[in-house]
Length: 186
Image 1: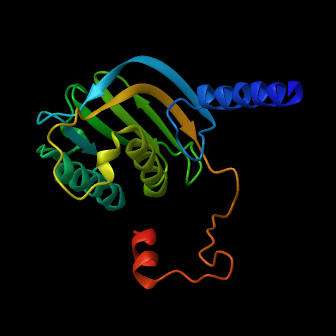
Image 2 (image 1 turned 180 degrees about the horizontal axis):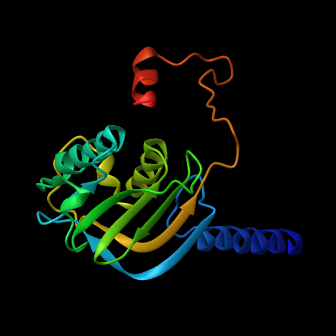
């Protein structure tokens, strides 16, 4: 009985430490995550600014905008970064050639969200992190007006640890239905 108690004690201590280290439940866990105070709130005043020279960044920004508008009912506009006068209430995509191809920096403050990446692939992964920080309703298909669309203030730097990515769909020799595979890929 005493051994079982010790096991449970250390098990819960271990689980608590893991959860405290990754409070925001971001998967995969970023290489650097610094907590800050405050939250960024999306509203109809929110504008997404993109670099004018890159159409791939525009595609990433438009996908983020359309998903957020679909579930939140907000009206967000996209503008050229050259029109940026004040970063307040904005999501700003920037090209940072010092970062690796899939790496990104994400700085969320109560005033703005800054996304830096060298390519649109890195910006895409930054947006995936934003989705994980938003309320779970972001993954829904229906309008959710009762949700407060806000993200906790945080600084994140991340890049892939491995040169490859993979997923296994043939789990224990059980083939998944085509509809499931299409949804999984989406």
